[in-house]
Length: 153
Image (cartoon, rainbow, N blue to C red):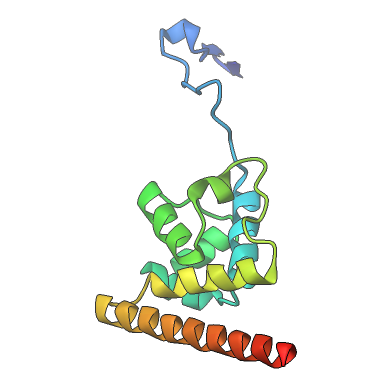
């Protein structure tokens, strides 16, 4: 690239100044911020989370998170990881070009919601939640067994 001014030509090519070219790995992809923003917005909607709730769970201000969901700014790696933890996805899910929604079915969405919620529980609350889920599973198994016996009789 050469720039021309009224006093002459300024040479600003990388080679003219012996500057190294910016390195981009062959397998590295550039993700447009608008696409990233759409993916995190869509994922939050799948989990029935508002922007304010995602921001709170990720430890961000609503304003800062707002910059990410509108594509105005790019989060640093630590922030990206925190947002992904809240949304129960990996950075690859929101950054790679195939970018399909990782959760498709109602069951998958529900499991994703559970993952997003439990990541913010204390250990004591997490143990309580596990106990409640185990009790629910035991109850459903007993109901299933009763129905199966009723059909045979």
